[in-house]
Length: 268
Image (tube, rainbow, N blue to C red; front, side):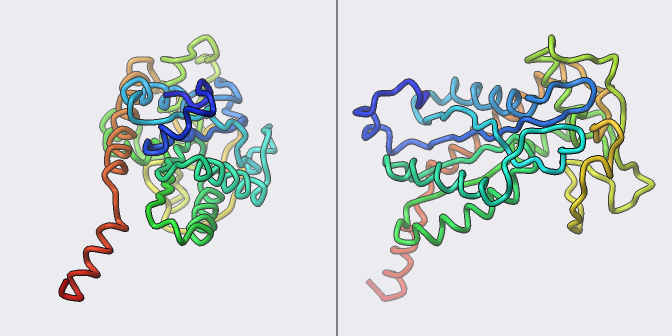
């Protein structure tokens, strides 16, 4: 179900569903992919999920404005950190006000990670009295990491940004916007040790970099290894992983479990 197509009297009837909020960005993706790549991809994943779960979820329009200051050397349209946190908080408050109790922030851009987690913390404190409220944040590539590692052909360091995976999906969904003649490997290589960057292998430490400190072209990874066939596999794996997450969320009732545990401890 698409939220934008409903009338306001319909809202009460959908409060028991899981609300899915895709989060994208408008930022550089090397010489071969468009600025809207993250938004195109997360929108495609979300659309496929909605097609399979029409009767159990409410899908919001993709929020295209992301937190991307690290791309400003090459080009981006970015919302600063604290305004982004407040945007996520305001969005979730609106959903809670119309009755949502299970919200999935489905991320499609790595830069949104830290402000989304900060917003989660703020909202958890703000809505402490709503023990049945679950606000989940997840990036589709993390949910599907096991499957993505089975699909990829690039080694560690081959999937970071405008990489094998993103380029493959764009070849499947928006091939007219991809220029493979300009797709070139770039970014930190194995010789950089801990600084080797790959979306499926988190670094064991934190270091803030601007993108031009890591890449000359705006790419991190090996986009030359992309194919449209892999793109379809990546999309289907992402869809399945997101559906699994939503189905698990739909069974959550921690507040009832806690009440039951309290009763058992008190011998009731």
